[in-house]
Amino acid sequence: MDHRKHFYERYTQAQSRFTSEAQIQDRLHAEQRILGPLLHQYLPSSHAARILDLGCGYGANLLSLKDKGYSNLRGVDISPEQVALAHTLGADMVELGSIEAALSEERNVQLVTMLDVFEHLTRSEALSVLQRIYDCLAPDGLLVMRTPNVDAPLGSVLSFGDLTHEMHLNKYAVLEMFGSLMYTHVEVLPVNPLGGSPAVQLARIITKPFMWLHNTLSHIDQGISRSATINTPNMLIVARKSGGKTS
Image 1: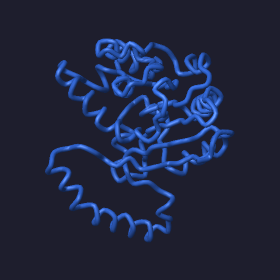
Image 2: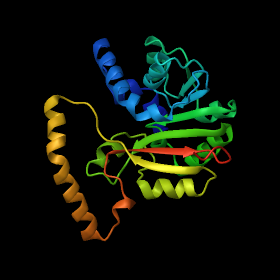
Image 3: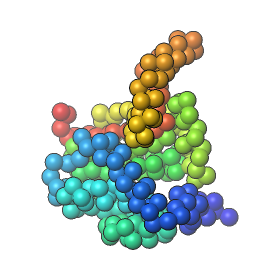
């Protein structure tokens, strides 16, 4: 049995586990509140710019972009359940299909997003997809990805919490992969947690210096540079196509 096919055909049922329309709307709005500030600085200035969301799920990012006025949007996902849910939510720009097939049809894309997708690929698939994305990007186009980070104290919760994940990544592994390709200005950045109740937000403020101290001492003890790691459960990867602007 193909385990990925098995789970993707039941992804909403097995992974998201929504039990009501209200829960779907709550999750959608919570995700959009996170994606807004996360992606804001990487969005094209023109609302007519071509944006491609690969592995878009039920379309949370695309619906947010649509609300911001972007009109040249396309999303692709391999899960029939996720695509059906996207259409129910009004994301009619989402279609069922593979990442590879979608990339073979695209050219001059200003922004490609892959949110919680990269980890689902094998190493060979990842190299192939990254090269195809590079080929379809417009000059100075950007690829923006969010993926779990195994170096975080609780990184295994996200990285190993999905049975379709094939790669378990940290900053070094990401830089190694991109270092073998033609992208320029590659950044691997922390994704700090947002949201939560006032009590949760206060707890973050109180514990932050203690977490920083613990992290610093751990790096000193193990002889590892702080710049070599990221400590948030998710990391953001931003890569520019070479040959474009450098500022």
